Length: 126
Image (cartoon, rainbow, N blue to C red; front, side, top):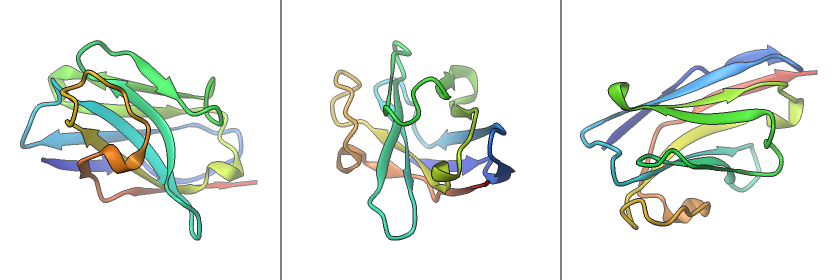
């Protein structure tokens, strides 16, 4: 499985960005796909997850109401729409795939995820 993120960049507080995560090598049909982020000197942090088959989602409290995770089955791609960005959202953002429960359980612990992309930098200036 290969996951490739794109869409990061430098924006001002209040702006929006949309991150993409394109998968190859395997379909996501039995997976939970997640977005995580990690700032320098900090632990990897859960952002959002989506169950590919049903489309149900779960968000970290810090992004709820501002970020939206979605998927496009035809493109085998997951998106993270980020609105009302804040300086504290500055991080490297990673997408990851969890096939461990065949999509039956939605886990937000990054250690449960089997496959990771290379990350994309998001920088929000104040």
